[in-house]
Length: 223
Length: 223
Image (cartoon, rainbow over all chains, first blue to last red; front, side, top):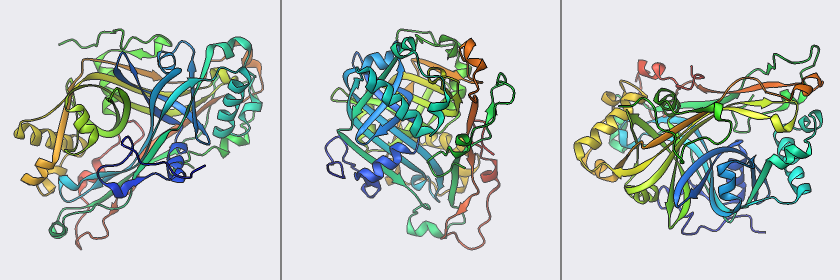
């Protein structure tokens, strides 16, 4: 299996090409760095963008939802989908508006979505999701019952094309602007995990599990 | 002007309807809470989702980009667009996988995008963007020149329909699951502004402007 996606008409970056990446390692690092993605799909030819939670198994992306969800119903039959993951990592304040920018990481993945129809595959995918997010959690929870499994649709998409785009570092100004007295630099934006908030209805004496502390936001900010 | 959007086939929430909001105050609070949005549009009938920076003036959303950008070129002629803003505010760990959820805020806005063709309007929109993001910054920077203005396209979209969806609070479990020994609660995810990082090429003695300290992420986390 190749370790890079091929730049096509769909994914070839026209501008700022030095920021583009097609190798799987980079694309997957961005896709895996957040649970939150944005799924783009069409209804009657018009675009919709729905935020949801995704997870990845090699070249396959998964997400899930209520079987009654309009997004799920719109894509599960093989619809073309663009799944995008993005982070705003900082404001890049240059000495001119034109060179102002943001530091960011984003990845776009294209493919066709399908519902997981096999019951065992669906259960395994959901377990894999929880295991990837928070190892140890699945075994702690009450297992899903038949009715719950019926109400849940798991969708997958084999990544046909993908690319990542990343900007880091200080502003790049026009040479003659460096002499200006305007302050320039980066204002970083960071994500953190806060302190766990126990459910007010938690049974008395329930200990805080170690796996809670092990959970990290993978985007570099988490602690 | 009405202070609420009308729930249509496009925006009416089918499920979890208690989480849906159509009043402008709530929808705009989510749209304004982040600079980062995801723009959904079509090329040859296939969906694309591009992250970008947006700003709002009443019922009108703006974003901008290089005049050569494929996203800009694809939408500027009146294309239907879905612009979505989302925050992941926390993991909601319930006692069953089925009731696991996330706390989030999201808003979807629908309309048709158009390029701002009037030069004065374009300049005013860019100034408004900077003024909203960081009051005081515009006057500090070198003004845009003719060539830069030519290379920049500003796009706007009058919001035709919009809705917000918000989840907050602890998990909601099945009544009989509250007795389980499984830990349950919320793991908050927060965004913060980090310390400013001065450009290594900053002219010696350039002071850090007060407006840098005044910038806040509006999502409640920023400080």
